[in-house]
Amino acid sequence: MDRKKSAGSQIFKAAALCLPLLWLAGCAHESAEVTTPSFDQQIPAPQMNYASGSLWQASSTGLAEDVKARRRGDIVTVVISENASASKKAATGTSRDSSISAGIPKLLGLEKTPVKTWADLANLLSASNSSKFDGAGSTSRQETLQATISAKVVDVIPNGNLLIEGRRNVKVNNEDQVIVLTGTVRGRDISADNTVNSALIADARISYSGKGVISDRQKPGWLMNVLDKVWPF
Image 1 (cartoon, rainbow, N blue to C red):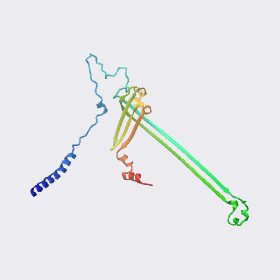
Image 2 (cartoon, one colour):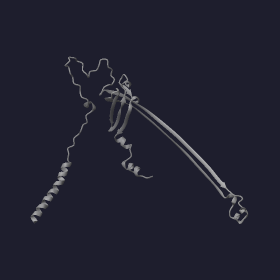
Image 3 (cartoon, rainbow, N blue to C red):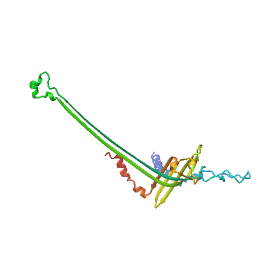
């Protein structure tokens, strides 16, 4: 019995030692960089076919075509010129005054009795009330964004409108400035030099953000954010 107990305890200890090793082996993995294919890589290249004996291919540009973007994968230059301003002002003022008084100069001759010594029947009730409220508020906002970015036609919807998407990342001294633009544009709104103004883009989403040391210094610390959330005053 003692030998069986000792053998069982040894097996249990060996299993207890192996479990952490198996857990570490399961957690270990080889890190690999995953590269997302770009939009150009997702567009299949047209297959050349000279069986008909003609040099003209489906992907060839017509001799009478201009440089305007019209197909999936074409590039269009977007001139971002956003100027927005808004202002609002409101004022409110209210006032109210009220008063009331009541008296019984003569009541069944009680004014001649000893009741008059402790009660003035002519001035039984007198009250007044006054309230006043003044409120004022104003708000204003002004935004200006000027930039130029080239966007790609990611899709052509059945009515001929073009879905475009563009991104530009400029890095200076470890500070990234990122511009992202998406939207829908009509082919006829694209000018002859293949440019379009951002005001002519429907459902436009324009994001201009920064990432780096300077942008980090413009944000409060995490502890300040926590205190702002939980501070009751």
